[in-house]
Image 1 (cartoon, helix red, strand yellow):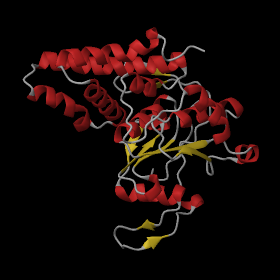
Image 2 (cartoon, helix red, strand yellow):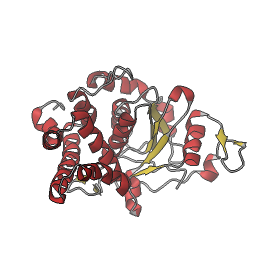
Image 3 (spheres, helix red, strand yellow):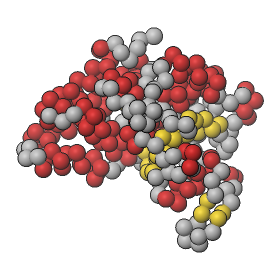
Length: 299
């Protein structure tokens, strides 16, 4: 298998980011962080978040032509990421993060090697009966909530499930306390056509400062594939998947978990093989011929 670390693939992403660092004098961490934030903003339609790094460039006295050139480099890096993922079927994003030496001992960030992650993915799947019995209304729930990093294990689990049972509907969960890692997982969910939620917070305390819902099925209705949930919706995710008590912010009372049949909405799955355009990119995402649940209880 071709690996991420072949220069021709890695450089799809790193060359534009290195150019930004050289032109602005900013550190690789700052450039990478800006790029991740702008990429998530592109997929969620958050214009304010997208403009924030560009506004900083303006405040540094750069002219609009230079700012447009820097924005183009950010977009080129995202397009390069899409291309590299398609070509390698690897966690390119996590690999670039490691390439720049951005893992943090403070957060005990030691990303699982790809070969180990693929082996663990097999163990991360539900049993055969659960896979056979899964329905769009009661999809499989697969995740990594101990600190998902870039979402490598979850992505490998999704790929393994598609190999074994292409039609099995699944919802994927990621949980991390590092904002940058959580956003990398969001991007990996989008790029690998995965339906699910990424939570930013401490899983041991069952808190979540931010929660994103990801589903490329939303593109069919003209919506962005990423949506950040409000506090009440985030609480429902914690209640639905982690058993946390759901508190009605208006009434202040604890509520029971929502009834699956009456309160869960399931979007129609994308047509197998139908290309899904990536927002603001000259690159087409080609979804795998798999059944996605399109699961969104907040639709």
